[in-house]
Length: 191
Image (tube, rainbow, N blue to C red):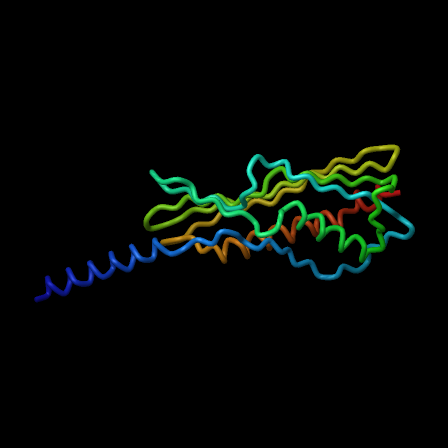
């Protein structure tokens, strides 16, 4: 009798685990950094061109790798370079910087990396997230180049939750964009 109950529990566990592994993965994640209004930085009578270029070889944000299976790739719902450009543009304008395509100051941002790599096994997962942005500011006389990086690792049991990965990615991107917006060298370099 006890053996039958044990076998029944094991079978139930295997079925639940199998169904859990078959859950759908969304086609897109929402990349939406949330930067609160910043005080203390103002740009009086300053203008700049802003260009954001995605230098990545692939457009996906999430890559889920499983042994002996094709990788699952999940892209951002909106173009990642547009999200970065719109976020920075909005907040620089709130600081008083006029974004103008004819300005002497040029801010070029290249997206070098933006990826969440998930190594998924049957009973656990490991995640490595990396975002790398290179900012090049030219004020007409000189050029300033600064790289901004945010990297993190995590792991857990069973299956990685896309919603959690999305939230963590947005938090990392928010920190990175905030570092760019508040960087003293960049703000002082604009003429």
